[in-house]
Amino acid sequence: MKRNKNIGSNFEDFLKEEGIQEEVEVSAIKSIIARCIKEHMKKNAITQTDMAKKLKTSRSGLVRLLDPENYSVTLLTLNRAASVIGKKVNINLVSDEKISKQ
Image 1 (tube, rainbow, N blue to C red):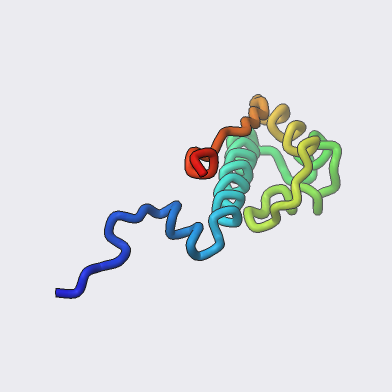
Image 2 (image 1 turned 180 degrees about the horizontal axis):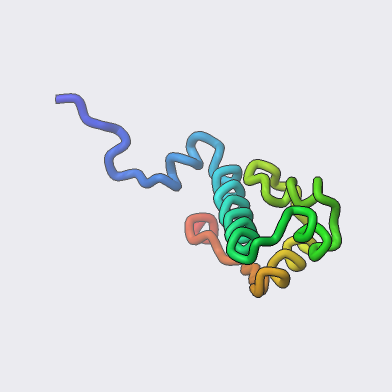
């Protein structure tokens, strides 16, 4: 009987093996941020133009912020966006147990 080499590994290990873990994690974070902002805009009937003004950016800057595949968001923009939707940014650097054990 042929044994499945993937049994026992986890999704994180798979992403690392494929060399895409960082990209997938960043994409997930950016998608969550974009979704929160879009939901706030919809709930409060805020147009893109009005939201851009609140963020002190251009409408195209807001479009980039809302684009889950555009990862080039500054901390300043992220902080402004969080403030506008009644949130705070909380960034933590945590140890990767697998790296620290090596």
